[in-house]
Amino acid sequence: MARSSAATTPVAFLCLIAAAGRWAANAFPRSPIGASLGSEHVVEEWGWTPGADRRGAARSSSVLSGGGPSSGSAAGKGGDEVDHSPSLTVVGQDNGVLIGVGRLVMRVANAGGRITSCKIDGVETLTQADSQAAESGATFWTSPQADWGWPPPAAIDTGHYSAKFGEGLVKVTADEDISLRDTTVSVSKTFRPAGANAIEVVYDVTNTGESDVTMAGWQVTRVDRGVTFYPTGQGATPASSFEMNTSLGYSWATYPGVAQKNFGDGAGGWLAHAQTVASTGVLLLQQFEDIGAAQFAPGESEIELYGDPGGLYMELECQGPYTFVRGGGTLSWSVIWKGEVLGAGTAIAEGSADLADAAERLKGQDAREQGRVLLSLPRQLTWGGQDGVSRDRMQHRW
Image 1 (tube, rainbow, N blue to C red):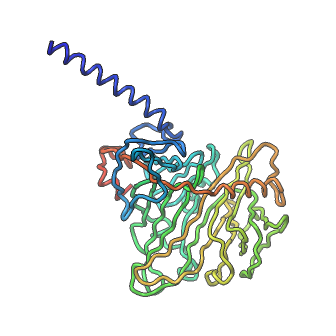
Image 2 (cartoon, rainbow, N blue to C red):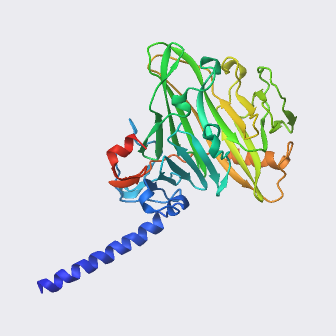
Image 3 (tube, rainbow, N blue to C red):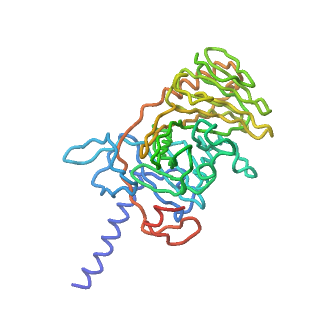
């Protein structure tokens, strides 16, 4: 009888595991980017349909420094937890990581912490110049440029960034500080959900020295030829080498094909770029704090456009408010990324009412679904080409 009982128990146990697996697959379906890679590459994957219950799950502690649970989760009946976070997926790759929220997928490289790809429904929105890696994707600088001249400080533009993972967050930090006037600063970038198909990038610049400093955040995004536009502001700006056209209350520009710069003031806290990709069109929209001319960094403006002289790309540049930061203090500024594949027949041209309507509609989808994200990190994984990298080591380096 003992042998019969022992033989039955494993069978029942395996059935229970199988049932649990089927339930988990339905309750927490894999994101498309997680499913497209081998399981050995998956660093973290979590998420569920916003509004769905996730009951009885254990919470792991955050590995982010000071990364406690975010606000917004509610308690269900009987103490069960109900989360309303957008689905978030993190997939490790050699020398980088994929971050997915709904239909929007970013790739962040350890070199420069640079956003090297941003796809919506699989359609690329950023320049892919493999031979010009330092001149592709999206990067971050401090403003004004007069503080460092040219080229940008290598430590934050092309240097190595280390990664940490936490509750619904991915944080990358430059390994080295940079000198900025009479002090030094460190740069980190935090990626987190900002809606069903949106990712917020939070840029933190910490004054690691003792002297005070005034600075602004500056995001630079390289895109292919297309049409760039934003709501027209009235603030005074530095002189530009090319002017934008105005129509329907927006400022419009088409890639000039030469080295030219435009300084502009927006009115709605967003900047958009539309381009034709294969047989369709794609719209990239970036939202940020709307600032007035009095908040511009010296010699800079809220929105700047630059045409690459080699014809490789156009730069979409947005800047935050010029802010005084004491020694030990941190400047925090964020940009929300969104995208949309445009419908057939959408006119991708300056003054296009279709583009303006699409951007306003996309901009309006900005209700952030805050909530704690439950996650579980694997004990071992493949990371950066090394087998069996421990969870502790994974926190510190790609």
